[in-house]
Image (cartoon, rainbow, N blue to C red; front, top):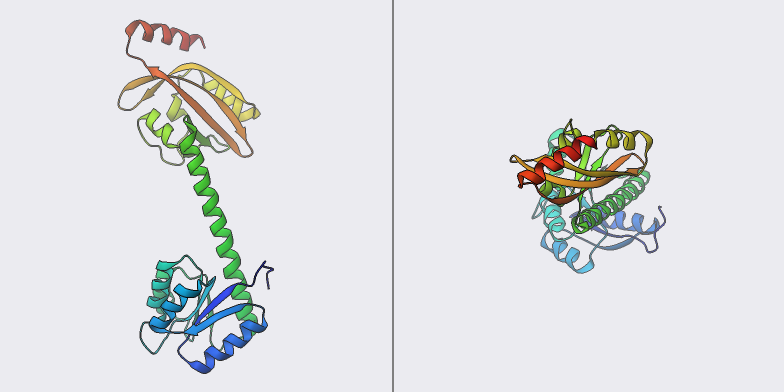
Length: 258
């Protein structure tokens, strides 16, 4: 079993007492903690009380709620992985079970090796996915708090993510896969700066330049291009709207001169 600081807690949902008892004994011998066996409303209440780490549920329950519906109710209360027990592996059964996004299936009669490997992989996959979600949420929160427009580029210069400040600066959203030139414009004086930064992976300062934004307004911005392991981040700072004709003319000259 994958090493855990404490044994994972498993709730068995099975309405055949002999099968539930047998599986409970097997899981206990494998080192997991079985918090109980139940079905129907009792299983829902037991899940609420014990907060299991994994739900092992028979799809074909003969009494009360189906295994799929019961799992959906429990999953709505808590974010836990579900492994289904089933005597059937037909497409219709699997399709119905997908609505709760199970982390695995075990075909009856249950073999010890299948039971152990499927549960280990379900717990591992769930833990990894949860960590990735937490990191993504942390990144999104950090990006939202930075206060500058951030545009993340891959190695080919295609946009893979932007923060809310970038959307507001651009006056529009950009689809993933768009190229950075759609942000700066082909004729911008800083095109060469960005190209060399992507090519050489150097931290490159972008002098003030004019950027066209939707719907038809112009912004004076500056920024930097920062290298990343696979790509770069384009950081832009808003220097203000260009409305004064004199200021606009002077800035255009500056922009052309680079």
